Length: 340
Image (cartoon, rainbow, N blue to C red; front, side):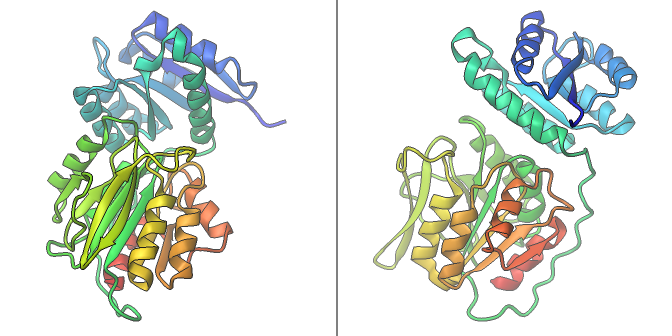
């Protein structure tokens, strides 16, 4: 029998602390070994208890969540799951926390009796995923250099990511130069309300312009579009123009937006001139999308286990035999440049 995942819950709300304990008690492989009411107490208990995973409220008195996170990462890196709120300010703080080393987050505003069941499932799944990994520093990025890509230059790059994605996306998109000669489309599994903040943060840190996509928007070289959360995105060609369409179908997809949906549409529109990339994340979204791109002759890439925060999505695609090249994060931008 494998040992249980030991969790420390840090939150200034007694109600949230009890609710998280109750939700995690449903999983036999997870044990809450301690709770803390603020960051200072959380740091003390992290040292004493040495938990496998810490859930951390982003807004607390005395020592706030981000300050606590910075000290945790400096003293003893440990997988951290942020407890956030779906507000504009909450999104900004959460994304900053992911940059500082947190691995994932959940919406703590869902800690209500009516929505407790679905939140419990999400919380347990994420604790299990983080409990199997370890906090690790991101690799030092090497300057990307375009090599000799085979065949005609690619015209569209579709990137999929989930857990650990915001930081990985900054590394990849940050490695693309101004005037990048292809369109870039991104699917990041993230709750509604966070996509715009993610796009704005990428835009501020990257040489290529990044924005949240809108329905009917033109897909053009040198522009990075982030698919909005909560709805599917697909590319369509009308005459000589390619545009992005947002819609609800398929309604039964596990994720909205779905990387599979967007990648399959890119394969139809661009054929062998499409590139599909799957980065870190839970689950298998992107596997069928990469299959569609590869069947049309396009290039398919997956992040290697050594740099993935969670190896689920890349592993699924690799095991399905739809990945042409498996590469560490620091080489992804260079491979994309070589293809275009």
